Length: 303
Image (cartoon, rainbow, N blue to C red):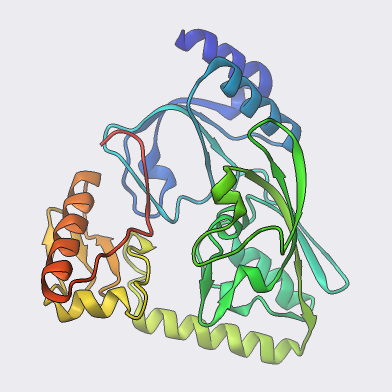
């Protein structure tokens, strides 16, 4: 069966774009994760469409991967096909006061393109280590900005294999959610609406936000960004800190001493370490404050 799947994937994507038993720790910012049975890097949208249709027809599990920046992959890996977009489907085009980018384009690269064109509105995203597809799906945000403020339209692939175009309003953006997540769509590309601005001011804003990130976040350590969603009326990091958990660790996983909202891989952490740490942190916060922490990090694969 595996050989049939391999042959089918190679026929669609080309042998040079298909890998077997690929360690996913190489493709997540946590630097954690066992092997995927198959790992494919499509080089165009039509190949992506074909791969998705193939997996659905054969009932083979598949997962669309960007930069792996909000993801914890199990130590036993993933039984199925990982389709990674950021390697090849990452084109960025600017026109007037808008940017059209493919789902695999890094947010940081799109923000740089906006700066070069003197377009303002995307400064908040310049330090987010994810791709456009993931950012659109979860309505990524930082420092008062959110994707919903800049998304004009999104081209997606539906579960039925149809290509749909959604307006910003149809995206139903909410806190860390959107129609893409609810309907299990696959983002192909998005158009962002920006405004003309002063290049020097845009650059200064991006530099200031980056300095704030460096000062407050453990950017020098592997992590998946904010580990827990913000509970209504609270900040997850402050709750964790006030529960006395700064620096708390399980195995190689640790609550960052720099920012308690981050779990870091201090060296050799396993997915089991991270999950157990998250469980204990949630239990302590619930016991002390009566607040339940919901993971922001997505879980994938066999643990």
